[in-house]
Image 1 (cartoon, rainbow, N blue to C red):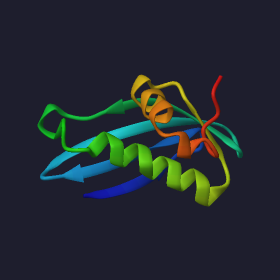
Image 2: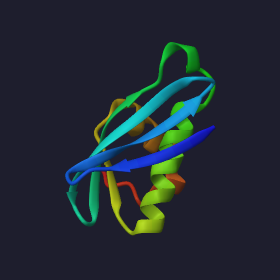
Image 3: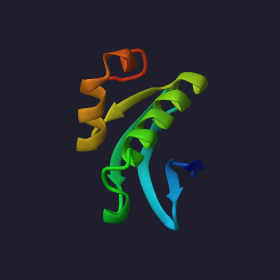
Image 4: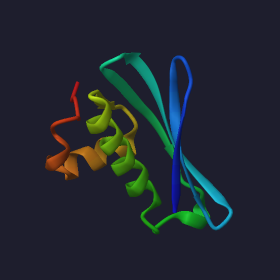
Amino acid sequence: MTIRGEETGTGGRYVAEVAGHAAEMTYSRVNAALIIIDHTDVPDALRGKGVGQALALHAVEDARKSGWKILPLCPFMRAQSLRHSDWGDVIQQR
């Protein structure tokens, strides 16, 4: 699985490509220290294969590397952040 990040001036997305299908996690940038993950979309063909989890982990690792926090407004990312207490260093709850 390949995951790439695409940054725009106001946000961006992480895209995972698997077997000709693409899943994405989108975010908005609040400032240099905070992003809001607002949406995760995994096509039916990729559901149950850990693609959403891989996108979430990629976002967490990117935040750690880049020194920012994540506000998980997306229901999927919020659920993942509650399951992974080890992500607490980069997750900002409301």
